[in-house]
Amino acid sequence: MTDKKMEIVEKSLALIHSQGYGNTSLRDILTAAGVGKGQFYYYFESKEELGLAILQYSFENWRQNVVQRIFHGEGSAAEKILALRDYTVQWHAQNQ
Image (cartoon, rainbow, N blue to C red; front, side):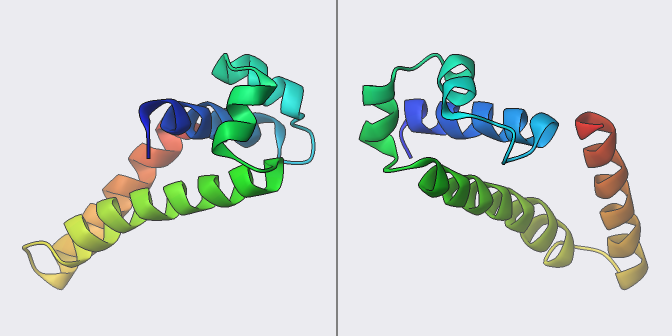
């Protein structure tokens, strides 16, 4: 994913997280990402395609942080459960 496309996804994710998907307009997304319609449509065919990219981005982050780092990492089952708890608490604190 290019830097600009990643930036659009990340800015949109934060916006949709705070306002909800249905309440976030394309204009909101363009403003938050600092792009025009032409640049947005260069990377995404629609808001729905952006939504799918956000889901994929979120899942990949979860997979890397939880599945790879915690579940496939070193430690006992109890240590992995504690690591998962710590990750979840930290994630919720960061994302309110």
